Structure formats: structure tokens, C-alpha cells
Amino acid sequence: MIQITCRDALYTYDMFHITKAFFPNEEIKQEVNEKQEPLILMELQSGSFCVACEDVCTINDVREKKHYVNRTLYQWLCEQTGQKMAWGILTGIRPTKILMKQLEKGMSEAEAVQWMRNRYFVSEEKAELSLAIAKREKKLLDQLDYQNGFSLYVGIPFCPSICSYCSFSSSPIGEWESRVEIYLDALCKEVTFVAEKSRDRKLNTIYVGGGTPTTLTAEQLDRLLTHVETSFSYQDMLEVTVEAGRPDSITKEKLEVLKRHTVSRISINPQTMQQKTLDEIGRKHTVGDIRAVYGLARELGFDNINMDLIAGLPGESVEDMKDTLRQICSMHPDSLTIHSLAIKRAARLGQQQTEILHAKELEEMIDLGAEAAKEMSLVPYYLYRQKNIAGNFENVGYAEVDKAGIYNILIMEEKQSIVAVGAGASTKIVLPHRVRISDKRETNIIRIENVKDITEYITRIDEMIERKGEWLWH
Image (cartoon, rainbow, N blue to C red; front, side, top):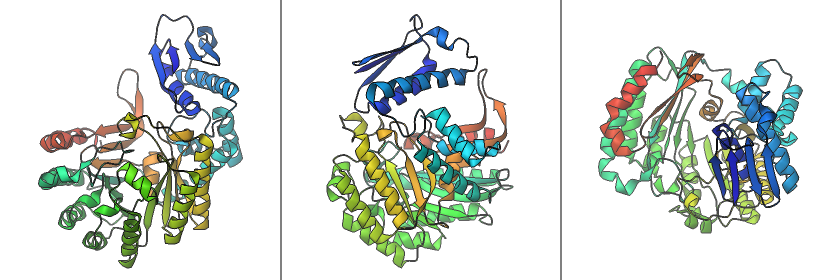
């Protein structure tokens, strides 16, 4: 067990995640003690880490105070363990956003990479990856009208069963079948409101996620997509994505509905092609089901199919990952997203004593994923990181040059407003200028959260609509 005591809560978040990157299987306890003499004190078996108050008293900017502490802690942990982290002291989820800002300020590509390495101790490989992705993202985003455009997220909070690693707001469809229509009533009411408020805006992308949207029946999918189509203009539409993530939720009739509604991109997500792992994590389908559904989608003419994989699932080895990638390559999806396992407290795995793979094994799995993507002529186009991500690694999306998921980039770079409807959906309004939302905080991004509980969402739908009305396009 590792004990961290800080005089100020300002430092606790970053210290926890930097330390956890070095000691993923250790319990870390934190305490804030305003009377403590040093600013920070951390105890390891190998020694003590201490930051004196006078070390930061001459630094006026709060962010720079944190940055100093993070750098000092990271360098000490490197000395204690003999390790270095690929992402250095970065704890945020958007590394490419940091790099893109420097490019927009006028830095050359080489200067931006070196800046990222020097400031955050990021490895040369990850800095170069961030640059390559930032350049591709910029090229795609340049075709969007940030000022007048927006994207729409539609949340379906149901799944066939709940995977052990999942922390999303979703419920087993079997418990809700009798109330799905009532949920759709509330959802369509919220869609109607957003459409009416957005008459003068250009809708660029739609993402129907969850949950697993294809847990809806073919008729319910048709009802929802018809309502969205008739509510909004598709004149400026660049992409419509539907998560068809679970093979055990997909039928020919449902895929035909998606095809009729001009859905341009779908996700069929195996996570792994190892049957033992699928059984272990609660996926109620077989490897054969994945292949069958993928083949059916191709037969029906879907030409932009994404597949997700997770590196580091419980019990999996590097050899398992090699076999999974071999099978994925034989199908050749149009895009592939390689996730590093992130164990969240809300997930079942987060409540168990789950041993995380050694960082070197995880790194090998991630590298194998990159090699497989290259073999299929897929290039990295977006990247993000999560809290509690195994090995301090990242999630990378690879795609054919003209098959990149635009919505995925938008949600990471936060340059265009994303209006989200449905239980647990989170709207992000990007304002042209920063506004003061409290005595201590200014921002140009307004977040509007819908309640996660499905029953609460249904009964409080008017409240959800009113929340949006306060900020939508003001």
C-alpha cells in the first residue's frame, strides 16, 4: 500500500495517476492534511518522496505549481523503479489536443514534438504518433464549420448483457423490454426539441451509441432513425454512425433498417477473438457469431465497418493477441480501434482483485495492433487516453484514408459542439469565447449532463430539455 499526503487537494489527482502508472497493482491511499509541514509526503518501501512548501512558493501560476510537482514526482519515481512511462506525466485524455494547440500557435512540427517531450517527458515514439494523428485530424476537421455546425449523439442505454470491464450507463435489455417504447417516447421528445432549436445550424455527424443501439428491435430502430431523419436536415451530413457493437444483438432485419436509413458507418466490436475471454468477461456470443455478422454486413453493402479490440483483458497473453489480430486481419475491417484495458470502479472488474498485465506485455500487444493495422493499410487517425488505463498507454483508432470516424475526432478535440440526447448522455457546447461560470472558473465549454437512471430520464425528460434550453446556441 502506498500512502500519499498532500497539504493541498490541488495535487492529489495527478499524483494518484502518475503513481498508479508505475504501480498498477498497488493500493494507493491519499489524504489531505492542511497542517502538514511539507507540501507533499509519499511513502514507498524504497524511500520517501517529499516536496517542501518553499519549493513552489515562488511559482505564481496554479497550473505551473502542479506541473512542477508532477515533474518532480515523475523523475523521483523513475529513479526508484528504473522505469519510464511512454506518456510521461500526462494524465489527461487528449494528448493530440495539446500538440495541436502548439501547431496553431505557429510552432514547427519538430518544435512541437520537442516541446511535448521536454515539458511532459513523453517518449519520442508517442510524441511522433501524436503529431501524425494531429495532422490527420486537422485535415479532416478543416472541412467543418465550427461556428455554425454541430454533431448529434443519441444514447441507447441497453445491452444484451453487461461486460465485466464496462462502466457505461447501460442496463440488460431483458429487464427493460416492456419499457423501451416509453424510453423512445422521451428520447424522441428530446430529439424534437434539439432539432427545433437547431434550425439555423448545420448537422455534420450523428453517432448512435450506448449501450448497444442494436438491442432495439428492427421496428424500434426504424422508429428512432425515421424520427431523427425527419427532424433534421441531412444537407450538410458527413457521417452517420451506429454502434452495432454486440454480435448477439444484430440480425439481418436490423442491418437492413440501418442500410435504408443511410447509416454510413457501423461498429461491430469483438474486443477479442478468444472464446475463453468472451465467456470470462460476460459477452454472450461466440467467435463464430462475430464472423457471421461481419460477413452479413458486407453482403448487405456496408463499406465502412469498424472493429474494437481491448489489449490486456483478464487472462489473455501476447499469443492470444497475436491470434486475435490474425483473425481480424483475415476479415479486414475498414477501421480498427485498439483499446488498452481501463479498469473503472463502476465496472465489475474494478470491484474485483484484477491483476493488470505487466507493462512490457501490454506494450507488445499494442505494438502488435499497430503492425496489424499497417498490414491492412490502416493509418492512425485519432487517439485518446482514459483514467486507470493499464500500463499508462492509450487507445488508438486506425482507418483507411477515407474511412476515418469524424465524430471520434470531434469528441476528442472539442472544437465543435456535440448535442447529446438520451439517458446518461453528455452535451458539450463549444462557445466562441470563454465565459465565467463561477467565481474561480472560466471556460469555453459548457457541459450539460442528462441523468443516468433510465426511469429518472423518462420521468424528468422536461427537465432535461429545459437544461439544454439554457445554453443551446446562446
